[in-house]
Image (spheres, rainbow over the protein chains, first blue to last red):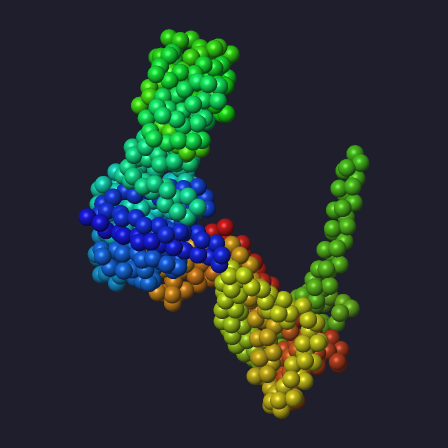
Length: 346
Length: 262
């Protein structure tokens, strides 16, 4: 069921259009990611959902009700701030209880709900601490608890993992997803990290220059990007420029890359690193190994190929790579299937 | 070797500066406890001059006036200065600056401010007394409170205000429960500073207190007494004023250092 409808929402700051006619439907219990580079309008859109920015055009509907003009303190929506914005003069318990006190709930009920959420985020023994006595990860959990304890219809998260180190971020991605399942609240998360969006979200909306570029499941946006920008933005993509003709892409050196599609004119063929194998395939190129990067699970090859402006990235599973015993400067043939190839307007 | 010599020389200069600053004050404090009362000879420890001080009705009346001026002007200046600081900071974030105007009373020489206020009250034919001293003190204290609170506001995380609104608080609740508590150390520090400045302020009080003994403040009383020479009572009085000022300043500094957050 659709919970949140964003209809043709626009935000202008003076002459700058930060968000330009974005429409999205977000379903109940969905984990939804707004993904974009800085300046893409994702944070502005989130702030409009929270009520901190008024709309220059369009509508935001929650449960079918227009909430566009409802102030933040009256919206059944909560925001987890990127800086966490924990109240420095209050304890962890005080911070979490604050939102419930605003609802004028009886003290006993407030205490019960705070205890409950403290157990969920596993910070029960930290309840009496002040925010500056907590680690980054603990602060992040308190900020999350403070917003969740209100049981909002929608929880908005602004770069929730941005301030954490890489290892903790990986653990918290799964933790957030588990928590979202457990509490059954719709999450809308803003992130610039495409990997984070792929791991956590049920659906991803890619924003570019204030416009909605593509919206779909992680698999959709990864496997079927709508254009060259989306293909490059999500994950790693190898591009081969040329001219689109019937049956494929004509390379400048006279070669062909087979790919289905009815595109004509200047175009790029694209293939993901993990779809490339060593040896001849339906599509093949040859090149020289520039560098090898060992990642434990897999080996990444950077291969200089005449037909591509950037080195071609190849991901080989560790066992496969071992069998090949490659080293820098080796000449290799790379091959991949036509069905794994995409083609976009250049 | 060369370095050590330089280090010793610098220590010597530092010692000289501190001696110049603090020896007169130490002498004053010591003399206030001198039994004989003469600055020429130490004749034993005594608190008799403090006793004499508290028996002097003029001094007590002046002290009471000073306390009234300091307390009321501090209270008003703290309320107005804090509101001003918050208002200006919020405006500034929206891109406007009227800073110079606010801090003018801190920079303008006291004598100029004193004459200006006197002319202003005379022009309005405003009857002068303790209330005009209070008003005059609010003028310069406001600038100091505002400066201290604004310094704290520079590092204030405004997302706290948004977070409070997001959690369901109306604007006045956010002020009471988030903004004021976070700013409290700076507000109290500003108030203590204002109190200290007001207690020993002479020129402006002298110009704006009008005629008559009724509105004489402590510094004015000391000035009146000193015309007949420095008496041991004045030493005792100055020592007490020093004690109050130092205590208030030390408290203010401590609060400024112990601010939560950044």
